[in-house]
Length: 320
View 1 (cartoon, rainbow, N blue to C red):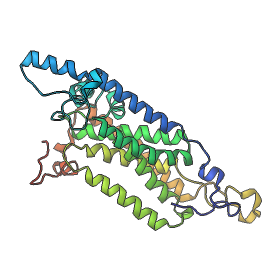
View 2 (spheres, rainbow, N blue to C red):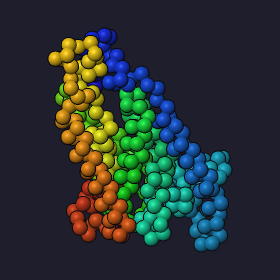
View 3 (cartoon, rainbow, N blue to C red):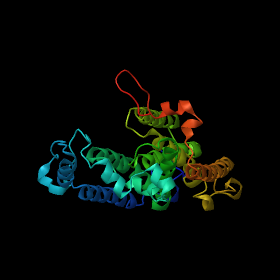
View 4 (cartoon, rainbow, N blue to C red):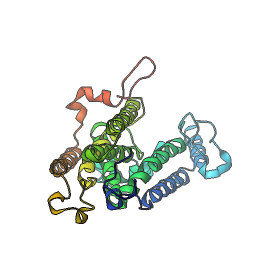
């Protein structure tokens, strides 16, 4: 999405503080390393060989062999149990997966945050980290680590809250909610800074198509689409608050005649959108957390909402 020269002069593509394109991305690489380290811890705690031996000894059940047994305790669970090349669900639950019962009834609210650093398997991890690098580094270079870090973390928590309000019979892990938050922030940033973009319609259509396709994939079974939706909505609202760009002429206002200088750094529409988004974010998190810790199940209020997470077909069934 190429922008017009905000300065109105100088080299094309150089936008100093308007674009922050000269910032070096370091937070997103650190996030990637944290996710990788967390996965190593998952596999260490899982200890597939010992887990299978204990299961066979206690229950007389032979679940097959660990995958990549040469890795020892870091080997993966049998593919019949976890086709994503990862640990068991009990190991994920032990180290911080999102578990509604433990969040609400055992005061383990920290799971709303810890779950966004865990992944169900190596494939899950690689896909999410590739998306994080592609999306996150570009945004961090333009807007800095503070704003992108806040969007990433709050979007992850927003996804966890919405997920917990609907899915209460199984655990959930993954950075998808935080990643969808970055996509939502990209969309609101485009809307908020509409006037400074060239090829704006093409950029908007492309971004909307990407979002729709990814949310569409979320209706497949075993995918937590509520985390995607919650993260996307949170990031979309935070983008209006944290990612507005100065209006045209503000950066080089000292070189402009007095009558041509903008009176405000941002447009009135940007202030209005930011204020509305702030109100919605605060009220959304407040209401969501109150309903969560009261033990509410939103399926009781919205029966058709289950189709936002999974649509049953002749090829597969959805969890009730």
